[in-house]
Amino acid sequence: MSPTIDVNHAVQSQHWCPTTVTLYNMIVYRHWEARVDGTEAEAGGDGDAGNASSTSVRRIVKESYQVFSDDTIHDWCAVDQFHKAIWKDFKERGVTQDSWSWWSDGAPQHFKVGGGYHDLTTYAERFENLIVIRSFGATGHFKGDWDATAQHVKRRVNLHMVSSKFKDDPIYTPYDYFKWSKVNLSERAPTSWESRAGAVTLTQRHFLFVTVDRSNKMTATADHVQSIHQMFLSETGAPCMVRDLACFCGECAVKNYKECKNRSWVKPPVKLRFTKVGPHDPTAAALAEEDAEEDDEDATDHVPHLTDPVLADAMDAPHAPHTG
Ligand SMILES: [Zn+2]
Image (cartoon, rainbow, N blue to C red; front, side, top):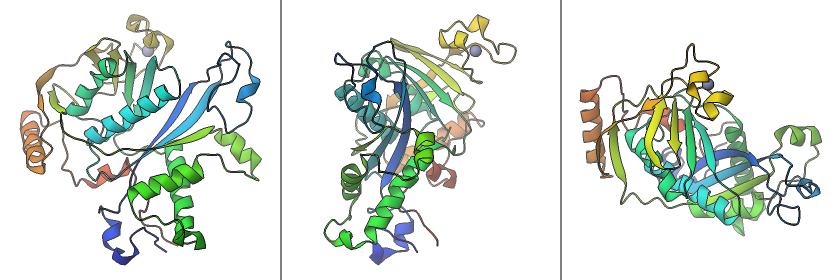
């Protein structure tokens, strides 16, 4: 069985097309914040958030964000705008955002790329002095909670699309997909699997829809790209400090790198140099040219072609083939 929202073009819908939905998944761990009355707005879902009555409570809240888009390029420009939407949503919900520790795989098209690194240096200015520690894992797609939460959304939508309710509440576009998910999946579903719910501990799902605008983006060439696995962005933005190996010890967290617990093998970060910064031209021709130039300049900094199959992994197509 292969349900899609475009049943008349089953083969086409296995590839990127206008009815394909881009779904960007993020799991957030943050401190629960007590408000004046001892409750936190929208902490909900697990029902006990309101019981904590003191600001000394250091409860960790785990939430998911699912950002939907009709975008078909899935590059670093899209990621940046998805993050802008997530930051804004947190702000509107009254959540304090002093710092983000953002951890992802190292997929080169949307994460490990000069333009994306340059975007990071603008976070402080654009997001009210937000401090960012940016870490990358393996270049291939990580498997983790973000996959599980996306799988839940996909499964529920697929079930809806083959149900009798579909004709009254159809899903024909990425925006329909988003709207249905927001209405039907924002609240945690009742479960008869309490032990499973306890293990998952997800308190809330948030759904956003973003139309990606690539005008006014800056592209950049950095002196090294692929070898970086950790970046430190201060509240003043530049300089961007980077290193090849990541460490999450307490000393590194306060930038006391000399006392790093792993200093025998993790080096202190160094300044990242941008050798070329300029307006981003989003046409495919311009992208191809950049790729060729970067390949020439540094053979080890591989900038893949847009159709590199490994790239499809980090952003999900909700109606990717299902067999069964
Ligand atoms: Zn360390």
